[in-house]
Structures are given as C-alpha cells and as structure tokens.
Figure 1 (tube, one colour):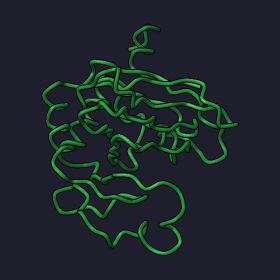
Figure 2 (cartoon, rainbow, N blue to C red; figure 1 turned 30 degrees about the vertical axis):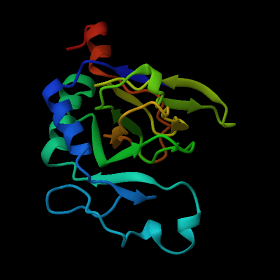
Figure 3 (cartoon, rainbow, N blue to C red; figure 1 turned 120 degrees about the vertical axis):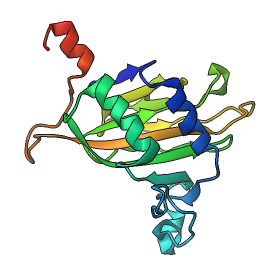
Figure 4 (cartoon, rainbow, N blue to C red; figure 1 turned 90 degrees about the horizontal axis):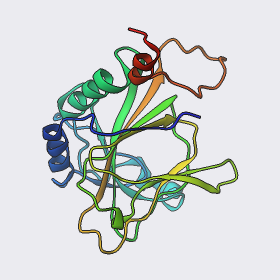
Amino acid sequence: MTLRLHDSCIDFELQTKIYELCASGIWHFGKAASPIGPDGVGELSHANRSLQGDNFDTGINFWNVKFKREQGLMKELWDQIEERIVGKDVVTVERVYGNALTYGMEGDVHRDDGHWTFMFMPCAWSHKWGGGTGFFDAEGTQVGVVPYREGRVISFPARLPHSSLPVARLCNTARYVIVYKTTINGYKQGDKPIEHLEFLDDKKNSGVQ
C-alpha cells in the first residue's frame, strides 16, 4: 500500500496560523467532533451524541474539533495540498477535523472512512516527544511508525490500520493534527480496493505533464 510523507510543502506562515488556531481553545472532548459554528469551527458544546447513552463507555474519548472544508484556513491548507501534492480534482474532501493529544492520552487502532487520508502536523516538535502515527497489520501488530514532524503531511489509504502514538511526559505542547478524509474522483462502487494514488511527484518523475 502507498504511504507517503510530504515534507516542506506547506507555507510556514499558514502552518503558524493553523497552530495558533489549534492553540486557541477550540477543542471538544468526546468521540466525535462538535457541531460547526458560523466561523467554520466546531462549537464547544456538550450536546454531542458522543456523550450520550451507552456510547460514552465505548471506545476512547479525545480532544477533537470539526471544520468546514470550504472556508478559512482549512480551505487554504487544502488548496496547497492540491496544488503541491495530489493535484486538482483528483480527490474530493468529504470532511475535515482536528485531533489533539497530551501526555497520558493515546489513540486506538482504526481504519478511516473514505478512500484516502491526508494528515497535517502543524506543531514545532522534538523527536524526544514521541507522538508519531503508528501503522498496523490486520492482526493489530505495529509494523511501522511515521514520526511527528513540523509541517509534514502524510497520506495513506483509508483502510490502512493506524493510530496516534503516546506523547512523552516532557512534551511542552499538545500534539495537534488536521485530518482530511477524501474519496477518489471517478471511483465506482464495486471497483477493486484502492491501494495506490498517483501524486504530482510521480507524474513529474514519469515525464507526464
């Protein structure tokens, strides 16, 4: 399967703005992001379905926020991902959200919905802090890890099992990620599972314009 790392693709000024947004208290604690407010960011609300009934005791609660994909910083970020990584009109963003972890929290192994996932890492980071993204086989054994790195975008098939990894106690910030869930344009239900996506670098290397 195609797991790709895309470093130094996002403008530092935009990365800084996204980090400042993440550090501004927008987060909701639960299993799903809170409803979106008029500014395109999830509102802080405890009326979320993830906090109701038996669902509260199932799975892992974490800090999260939902964004509107067609406005503000999330649109600016996606525009740069399209322009510099995947190309225009190759995939469609179905939803975009943020996750946050601090020391003592960790993710659970899961697969994503959609076809392809793009994850952006906005934080200045030390390798001593851990907080990478682990990838797993069908039996749940970890087979690889992508370290958290400032400004990095990682992309991978949505059905690839993965999880955020714990943050070290000496880390002095939260681990923020912005996640885009996408579907591949032109894919028809019943087609073979998607394991490869051609990126702009692939086209350059093959001489395709």
